Image (spheres, rainbow, N blue to C red):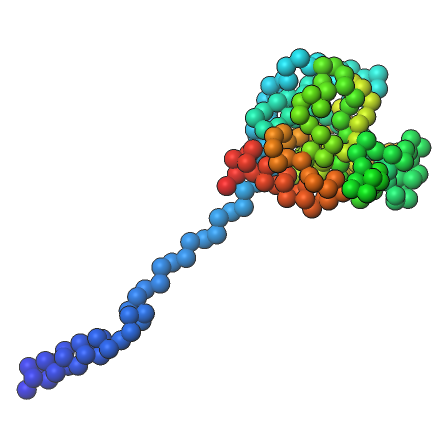
Amino acid sequence: MRYTTVSALVVASFIALAGCPKESMSVAPASAPPAAPENVAARLAALLSRCEKLEGTTAFATDKGGAATVPICKTEGALWWTADMDIDCDGGQGAACKADPYYQSETAAVDTHGKPLDASTLPFVVVPKPSHGFDYKAQGLKMGSVVAVLYKGNIEYGILGDVGPAGILGEASYAMAEKLGIPSSPISGGVDSGVTYVVFTGDGSVVTKKEDAAEAARIGQARARLLSGAN
């Protein structure tokens, strides 16, 4: 009787298992933890820790009358420099910019309507007039070329939007300073050092609308990830 009972149980169990849908027999694989986001700013900073100076150029100053200590460097896909940040309010429509004693209503770049760029709201960077062997146009750059700006582990994106004095590097718009947490007053703001400006080169590194900060950010993020090797 015990043999018959056990046999019946085995047969019943087999029939029950055979009738189960396959899904109930399968074991769900353990889900992999999400990949940690890449720190693009840190990767870029590491990549740019050594400067390969752009051929034919000499060092720039950060302020009028200052020592010329800032080289323009090159890497595949970009030109870059590390300097201070002075605040450019040209074209700015906000009250803080209008209070700048050196305020100018025009910018070298204009938007799609032919109006000056608004330094109060648009992140952009200033390049010098041709000097010290450097001419941004000769390097294939344009007003509207996309720029990444790094400061204290943060990264923000903008464009080349204005032209400044010959021989001087290290200036960006009021809006760029605001995004990076740099004091933005055109009178007392800015920082004396530690700001790295990365101007992307090559096809596809220029915005179609200079006033479109979102477009600059999209291009900049893609270029920065490519340059830094982030996945």
